[in-house]
Image 1 (cartoon, rainbow, N blue to C red):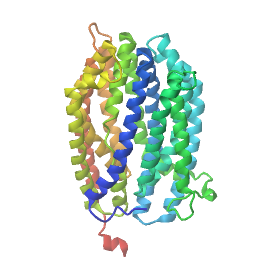
Image 2 (image 1 turned 90 degrees about the horizontal axis):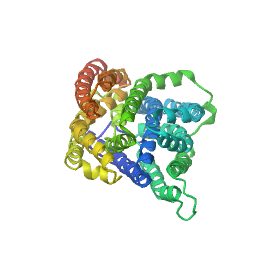
Image 3 (image 1 turned 135 degrees about the vertical axis):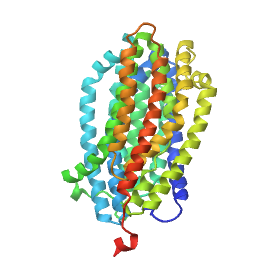
Image 4 (image 1 turned 180 degrees about the horizontal axis):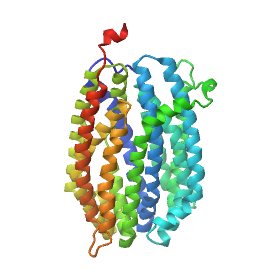
Length: 447
């Protein structure tokens, strides 16, 4: 375990963020390279992966419900130096991960064909999405265990194992994907399904690898099968904290589903252009700072919690400003890496040029969301996110029925909604600071 309650906040943020940035860079490379190979299969293939990939936000919603809850409760226990409680909560998070992963696997496989038929712009897109999901749903089901283990490690300030495993699995995925997609060396091209199979293989290797960090008895967190019988009170603690965040990502999945549904009237090229643009935007997500703030919150160090927010906000704003500049100046070049279809490029270019205006605001929203997680109350984040989705989805559904409607209308709605989201998040965060950072002096608490 690494103690994040002492020493310079900026150094802790730079150190922990550097590990997460390495992971994010390789994860981004995976997204983009995977999209590059799929793009060689045609517009329908890109649209199919985009439609199928929308389910990843549903998995993100469910896994973040688990991951955020695990990070928060374990980091609080670690901050209090309560090792037995941290170990118990870690083991219970693994049981919960297996239960939710198995449930998602069964339901996902049962509904995949219906989902593909409803969301695909045409029969070819729907068929390819169905083929992709047959293998991608098991890969996503395994994500729950991976998220739970990684969240527990981050809660204790140990970012290196997650970085090493994530980086290695992404490299495996990137190398394996073209061999399976195009049948290099095997003569059996799998098409879009090959991209999903490579993800499944890589995630399976990652789970086995990450498990080795918890087998040693001298590890701060290790598997203790004696406490694996369900403790519903522990599950409730994690889920109460994680549910608002999970629901927040679930609303994002609803937003994406609405956009894909509206884009059906414009054809597979429109869905593909939005899918590429969305992947590029995902590449710019800043790492979160919940573990640093969470340990200091658990230790009752209010000034360090506030300092974490300040430093993280400056870092996020700077990085996102650079990303916004690149997306605004050269959106055609970014989209053109993955497709040569002029119609797809036109949609993706317009999307990036417009939504790049809200990148900095989005970065600050993510930092605020991490602070809510660190303090163990994610309801304010849910409220502000719900307002944002409502401001986009309902006007988009109404306007899409009017003559002359264009997709760019949704992008402009998104920019305005994010600015409202940011203002509301800052207001609610200020309120949470006043309410929840009233600790007794450390000396009194120790006594």
